[in-house]
Each structure stands twice: as structure tokens, then as C-alpha cells.
Length: 115
Figure 1 (cartoon, one colour):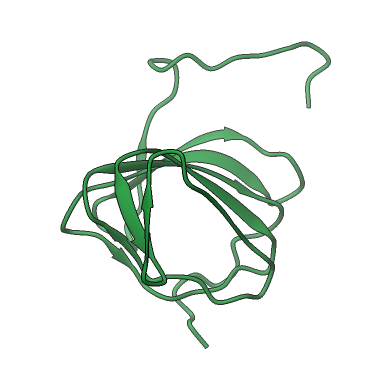
Figure 2 (figure 1 turned 45 degrees about the horizontal axis):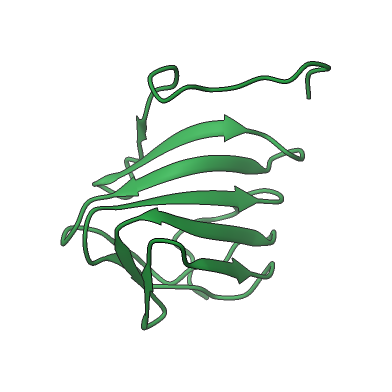
């Protein structure tokens, strides 16, 4: 972390496509811990299903806009959920175009491994 306050304005960072998940884009914002991530995520409505998966680190998610279904629960803008390390989550289905803010406190792990 720097020793000064920093900011990222909406036009300052670029969205990065995720090859493994067509229609998902991430905008990295910060790395709070080694291998961790604070990022924005965009998922396009009707085309995105992120399969059931687990991460080896705790994860925190806030729905900034839109509606997403996760593990059968509908989450609208303003919803916040937490998933402890090693706990299976999902599937995540974008009901409308959705934007998330995600904080993951460690490595992503082998994404897509739902065992």
C-alpha cells in the first residue's frame, strides 16, 4: 500500500475480459493482501452463469447495480454477501446486467473446480 491516499476515477481503469467466463469483465482496484483482490465485476444479463466453485480465501460481495441470483437466492442492488474460505458458492446467474464489488482476502484458487 502507498503512504498517500489514492483514487481511481471511473475512466481511469480498464475492464479486463475473463477468457474462462465469456461476458464477465473485471476491473482490478487494489490488492489488500498478497494474492487478494478488490475489484469491480460486470456480468451481462442472460449470458452468464458462473458455476458452483470455492475459493481458498474469504470473499465479500456487494451488488452495486442490477440483479443476480447466487445459490438460488435473488440479490438486488444493495445486497451484500459473504462466503468463507473453502465454502462452495453459486452458481451465479446475471438476471439483469449486474455490477459487483468483490473483496477476496487471498488467492482465487483453481476456479471452476466445484469439488
